[in-house]
Length: 59
Image (tube, rainbow, N blue to C red; front, top):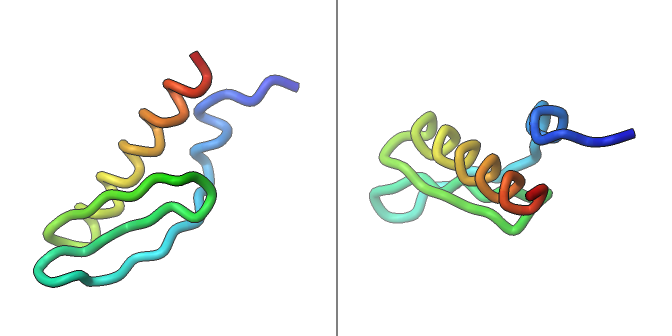
């Protein structure tokens, strides 16, 4: 079975915490993290960072 980027992105595990004025989202499955001004922004940025990480890893 070939795993695609879309299959992997269906579910990722993360932690979310506040650091000073930003929220930090850190992926538990991969060594990737991101941040944003809101929880939603931090999670959206994390998703994009994980997608990019997986894209580079698959190619």
